[in-house]
Amino acid sequence: MATFRRPTRDIDRVFLHCSASDVSAHDDVSVMRDWHVNGNGWSDVGYHYFIRKDGKVQEGRPLEKTPAAQRGHNAGTIAICCHGLKVQNFTQAQYQSLVDLCGEINRAYDGEITFHGHCEVSRKACPVYPYQEVLGLDEEGYMNKEPNTSPSDQTDEVAADLPTLRLMARGESVRTLQSALRSKGHRVAVDGIFGRGTLEAVKSFQRSSGLSADGIVGARTWAALNA
Ligand SMILES: [Zn+2]
Image (cartoon, rainbow, N blue to C red; front, top):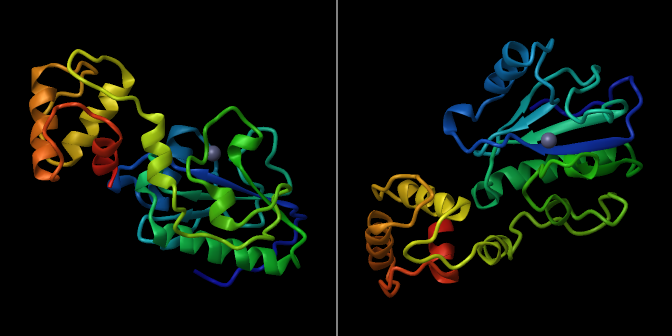
């Protein structure tokens, strides 16, 4: 990535986003550009920077152009997107690149710039990663605290949100479980129903992870699935 240079337009805020995809084929700014240009009919990708899972920072829309990223809040901003959907799948390399890039922007503006999540100006859960902790933001969004590229409670937070699941459970959390099992190489349908097939997959996963194979998905099993 080239060194950050202040664009001539006035900037006072930086917004953070996530791509809402964990698909590795989407892990490139060219894919985002295709979505935004050919999908949305925009002139260019909406973000100025895209950060891949390997931490590589790619340039998107030229900094001189206003982003198309936060509806109603694009003027005077820079938009940065990290590739990812589930919080546990963002990488330390991405967080490090995000801290480096934002640190560079912050220095270019002598600390007179604030950093925000898209969620602060919309009802979207974007970005899903703990950007305030990662960047070391204070209450107003200034980079005044110590950044933390390995937020400690990331897995616990996710586990705490997920209910204990057993045979006959149904719903979105069962789908999440089934997708996680599949990503660990277990063959199971993602249908949101905790039936016999899911039970066998859970037990098999528990056995291979050194957990007691009781077929009940609690905090430990969730944590192992998210690891
Ligand atoms: Zn966003």
